[in-house]
Image (cartoon, rainbow, N blue to C red):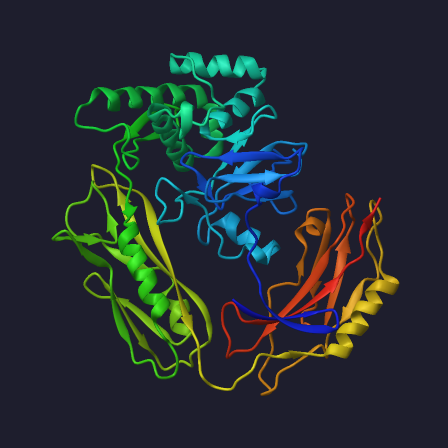
Length: 491
């Protein structure tokens, strides 16, 4: 992502990431490592569920994103209910998160049981204060405790519902605790929670876990099925009368090898004014067999694939069309917009009866680079220094004191060398520690001023505010950014 960044009075060219994993190698002596899994959940949002509604909401404290092993290391364990929120491309929670914290734009969760595709559902898993694992099993403990049970009673109730004793805090994926049956149980619970309402799942939690264990037992006893098949996951449906039924389903899967080939082809592709078009296959020959990008053991024949964001790509100057298991890419009459663009392919997941139970995506990235001389807008260095001086001299934050008279005039902060119309980001970007402590920021309707508001709820240090702008010749990932330092929030 090419972004021209202006820090105080200096102009710097840098690479701006989208937020991410903690480094467990730099952990302090009091650090704690949280691990989130059904399969390991990568790029899942770990947060404090302050209102206990099993969903991340604006203003709730964000702890970070899990890494490829489902882990996030914190300097110390925070107070409150720790939860992990899965994110889906363009999901409701993901959109709200990106709106409040643009550094999380285009971030989505991957269940490493199926590493070539985003997770299907936005859902939350919680854990009690005594556990550093977050899974469908720890989530059941929290649900039982929310209904009035002590932690030990909750575990006993879960074991009674299962008809056997387990440790809900074990990592059933690896090491001495590895347990394929518990893994399958957790997969069924995740699918069930994702396919039913939060309230229905919580209300029927013990009946659901009993039913889920029955389905696991059936898989174990059926010689035609494999308990270690990560893609065979029956789904439990909760009816309006709270009765339970189940669907037999193999998950729709994105083939990792085919996806890698598509990625490599797009990475080598040069799309500029001289680009005339290309076709990229969505299948490959493996040992004499043609392997498709998407496969589903419940679907015979070709699987229908769609491009869900073709209109966005067309606006950037490119037509993407699916033709006979391939993507055909051609320029259109629109001007090419430089930037990094996602290509979102989607296919429906059908159960054994041919009924849709969900959809899965494969997401790829392509770069558009024009050779023209059009430049990004430039920032006024002197005005940037003046704005920073205004903040340093006149602004202060104190816990419990409402913010007032904090407005910056940015009407002349940016100019475009070619006179192109300026296009601002959705909102100025605040360090999320400041946002979660009650500070908000917004542009005026004409983008001539920025105003801060809110009442700080807790202390914080090292905050920044970033102002992003581009023009209509530049697309995703290309911005001129002015970054201003904010005062610490004092007690």
